[in-house]
Image (cartoon, rainbow, N blue to C red; front, side):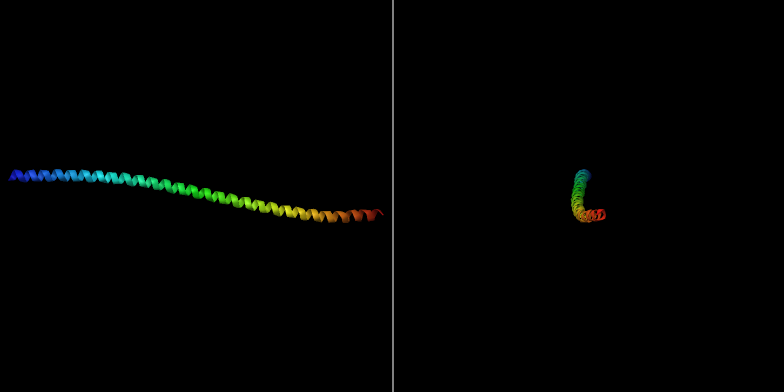
Length: 102
């Protein structure tokens, strides 16, 4: 009977050791999977950040191009206004010179 009890205890210990080894193996597998998922999440977040940065950069470039075009148009209008003013003043100046010579 004592032998049976010792045998049962040894079997229980062996099963317990096996269960611990299996649990440790599962824990390692879970940790490895968690590390892999964490790496994927970091890479995904990095990709999203780069994409967002690129989109913001493109939007800023488009806004800059738009403002540059508007400024060029405003400058063109001002040049036209100055040319028109200069043209009318030129005629006045010519008339003034002619009047002074006569």
